[in-house]
Amino acid sequence: MAEYLASIFGTEKDKVNCSFYFKIGACRHGDRCSRLHNKPTFSQTIVLLNLYRNPQNTAQTADRSHCHVSDVEVQEHYDSFFEEVFTELQEKYGEIEEMNVCDNLGDHLVGNVYVKFWREEDAERAVAELNNRWFNGQAVHPELSPVTDFRESCCRQYEMGECTRGGFCNFMHLQPISQNLRREFYGRGPRCRYLKTSLLCLLMS
Image 1: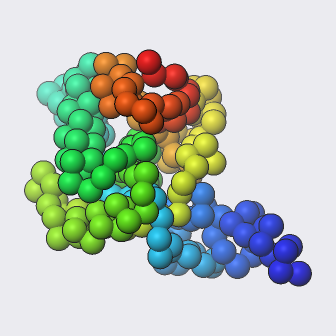
Image 2 (image 1 turned 135 degrees about the horizontal axis):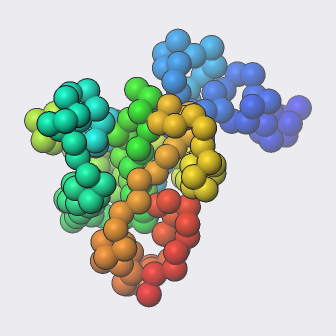
Image 3 (image 1 turned 120 degrees about the vertical axis):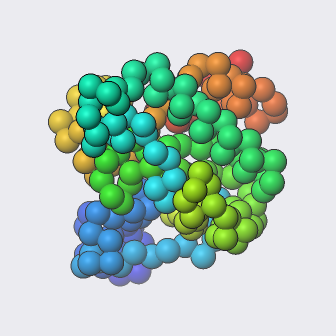
């Protein structure tokens, strides 16, 4: 029985633990979910909740004729955000294996930044110290995340341009960084490996 329960833990067959929380570290039902959200006591991954603000989403709530933001401007804004956050976290807390930013619109995923460190102790220290920090005028809300394999967290249809749920999909829509920034952060050093940011797994050289 114990082996069976272990085999279904965090899957849709598990009637006790929330499979969505286990896979993506978030659940659209929040505290109202009928299943348990088992928050990890140790993990390589932290999540900074609702940290990234996509300027296109902000523009959609205003007069589009005056607040249009081009795709190029969005990419530049995103790359600048990614570089600032990645650099500061790596310099202060330890080497980062990968960092991913959600482009979803649902409250439980919008702007979530997932940072996977190489060492669990670095992730733990980051959560403790970031808890009293502010970024661009908003409080930072960090917590340890159960997500360690982003292949299980992401929407495969989105990667193929076929997701019909749009920004309100319950799986991660990861926003990719530019090629130059990808090479800068992931293309050098002994731990260079496949980048999973958008599940394209491009080998950096």
